[in-house]
Image (tube, rainbow, N blue to C red; front, top):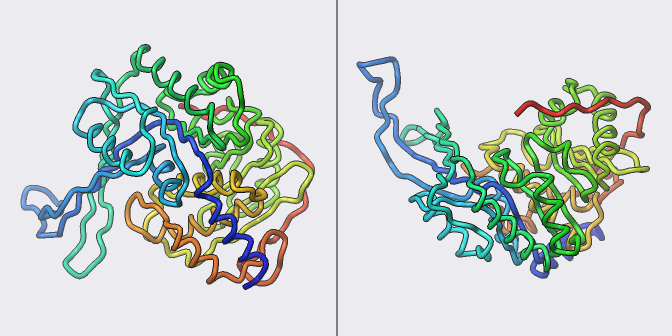
Length: 363
């Protein structure tokens, strides 16, 4: 076994010691499976014969579930309604983590994302449509209870993940008030914000995907490494992070750190993915746990890359197990940050001049 693989396995083993807090928007991901029966005579659409329904944690719940599946001691902070979706989600989360920070509010409607998947008897189910039912407005009293729960949770956390999907539950102001009230800043604080990333400054790291970077900075990246370089360096400077990890789909990842060359990490495994649903939550969870376990940013990015490569081969909102992650590590010939042993090793690009002024993405 190479030194890099031994090091990765050591880090994964330390996940069980990590006390992680995941705070943010809890979403019920509903999957309805059916078999194609025939074409309707009413309209040119397929008629599906109903098969089954599955509801799993999405949003911050997915990030928390991934962390728990890898053995971390997870506390989740968020808001659920006293409706059927909220009840099922609360029960699912409580089976693997501390849910004392999950507030149940009678006037709040739990957001649900319903995906309808169809296929034949001998073919894989494919998503044909998604229906989103947004959560209702958050009452001030419920918001205060969530903020108080966040204060209690971060008082003993090794790492905090802020999962901001734009509901207004977790915002830069909420985080600043919570950390001030708690009287401490956990060793690692990471943010995944779909619309408000520019407001989160001075945190450990963030993990935007490439379209989010393009919207925030106002550029089109495509295959232009020089544009990616300027955009990544701009975010690093403006947010004051210790690292920015940009996920690029089939193009892999790009890790930006101050005063270090950009680390370009190719994807692990096949680029023929089954489902990208929730992959960003998996990457964030593994990146956060790795840092709290003692990994460098480069090591944490590679472990997150392994996990991301595994989860996109699964249907629906899924998690990665410790056994699967270790198997992926053993199967790889990646020699770690900076190595050039084969196609899985990183290539590195020196920082180039120029900056791009970021802009806030429209909500």
